[in-house]
Length: 346
DNA sequence: GAGCCGTGGCC
DNA sequence: TGGCCAAGGCT
Image 1 (cartoon, rainbow, N blue to C red):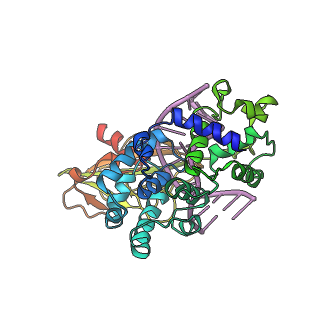
Image 2 (cartoon, rainbow, N blue to C red; image 1 turned 90 degrees about the vertical axis):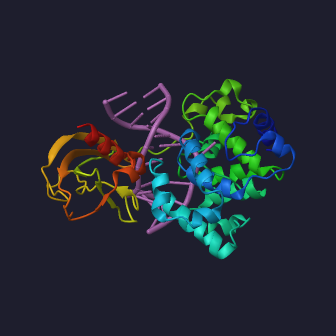
Image 3 (cartoon, rainbow, N blue to C red; image 1 turned 90 degrees about the horizontal axis):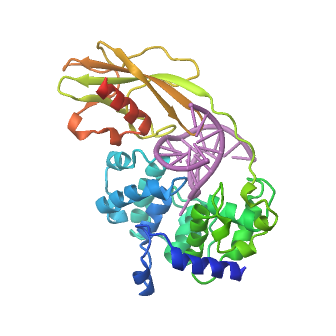
């Protein structure tokens, strides 16, 4: 087990990818530890999200809110707008909750144990272990999709997920070293992201090829096995873009619970498998400008986009007219950004 | 345990 | 084109 970790750490030291939340080689050599705020923020953003998608968001967040205290003091809507486009918006709501708990109950410093971290909003088993090991050098077992895949292949675990999860966790625990547990965790995840990939793994250049039982058995690429997934239904709806003469756009804030919760949004009907009745949010000469297609985690969506130029004194039945200059498409979840842009063209 | 919850890239 | 997938957490 120690041999595998040693090979992974050697590989990591020679080929670690640069990411803005990591400490560079020179600073690491000088004994510098990563900023727990940076580790936390990056790990929340990285939940089910690629490094490529996260990097720009991370830079914008730390530039605008350099400390957890600064983030905790920000208005909810500003943070939700900054998160727009990254997805899984419950993460942003819990991000703010967590920042405020850290300030109010921990003096603005993140707790340094896995158990204490686990009690914070938005921090589950994976993230608690990741922060504890990466930021605080704790020997915690980090288990994410990458680690599951690497362990399943390395030990030729054929039992499908999620049944095999605890067995994979036990294997990951056996590999976790006392020294440099955080670098070890990042090494396994980097391996899973770049070499031990879900499809077409690059076994030929793998630093632990000689240790891999899945490779020896010729089944590495088939692992981990998973249960088949359910098909996505298609839902339909109507979304409304009302523009006043002064350019103001009618927007609303979605309820905190549920899909796109807490986000700035265009008024829309319910989304169902049978199209909803036309219920515009305000009076106006409404016309259809096309449709927008979007796929969420568990359903496809087809939205009929309707636009209207409305009078300055229009009083909407729902939502609020927002100054055009204070709002851009990037402040909205992607499905609404698509509709907004389509209406702007048509 | 299983459903809910985004998005963009890949093949 | 469409399904699959990603450094998961919450209910």
